[in-house]
Length: 564
Image (cartoon, rainbow, N blue to C red; front, top):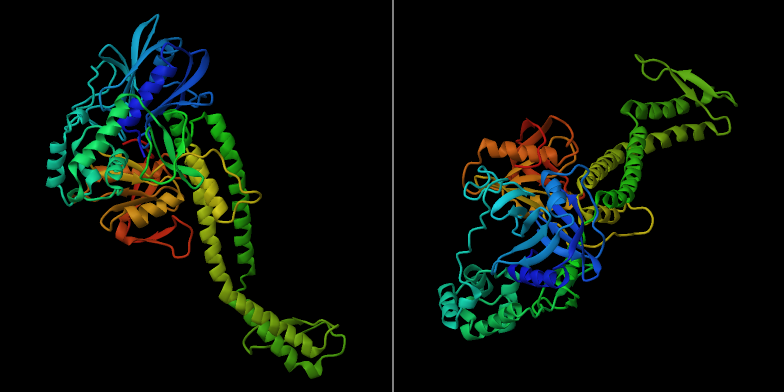
């Protein structure tokens, strides 16, 4: 779920109505990819957030005060203080059918523009004066994109236009030609492929309104009917007739839109598109609040780890050696053998069992008969024998449980937002390790698996937590993909997708550095990372999600690194 062009239009209308003419009273860096502002407009304080997250870029007004989450200001953070703190927000504009918002400010330093490009993977917030770039959240050099540099002192160039028809230019005859040309394709895909600004969600809604089947194929379509449904929604958007809503999914939401969604069943209304997005994504907050939320979950993990370690040590103590077991049996047989010679009230005796072995000292309970003493030794022998069969299995499960808790501990260390903290909390609760009442924090959309693209076009996936690690291996990966993981450490599963080309050593090195960074050894200077093909990775049967075995690996030693 991402912000599309229609949502961006709704946001521009909302921002102009609520924020235009307001003065910025506070600007903060919530995290490395997110800016927050307190703007006094229309006689009230309002809180604007711009997030350049590659998975979920967005701009929205949030209900709660924005809080600083970065201790040391970044270069753009210093520029924000200089140019934006105290500035007046004069206008918010949007290029037609793009996911780009221009926030135009003015202050004593002059005019400055913040450009929020809400495009997945290329998301950015760029500060410009005129056409000159002052800085950006994400700098883009020639290695990342030789055609469009986003660097200080360079000229700002908008993203290349979409090579598609503008919605205003779409006619019934043009639609008919596209539908006929791609008759076997689902009709919504035809709209996405040929019309600028049309997202999959919007396209499915159009097709559902035209046919009552969002997945209908193109050859089933009457172009005039599709055009009518399409035009109705487009005209409503151009007129600013917004009806924001969300689609419930359990205790959260699976979709939102600025128009009624009729193809996804039940919906709930929202007062604004910002409210819909805030309820879907969860409002970003500062480090202090994150750490407070983490501390509750951390205490539960630490307690669970302590219990798991004590259980494992207890099993080790219960595991009798074969020699000890045999000694119990021998002592029982000696009691029977020496029964006629033992005096009443005797407490011990010494006897030879093996001709070549040492004598055994056998203790006797005077309160029991000789036969009962013998049986007591045989009972101990049988108990130890049963334990010898059972304890290794229990130790194996205890070891798996311990590994899973250590993985959850690492997941919590790496959690960067509410949904990621909540994923760890839910995993603890579902695995039975949460003690006390089952609680939850703020609900937002669940962040997806991290996806990065190298300059050569290779796609790298990174699991955010144990569940995503499991999904990455079992659902996202193909047998020829390369799988990477920090050796003998909790951490993220990393996957390089095989696209038919040999995967260069440089790409494998980069992925290994990411695997090291997203592991328990993030702070180390040198980490061993195992690399193997997905075909050699197997989830452990009966184990919690994310635990695997693998073979045919080779090991790289790398320095942890977050970015490509």
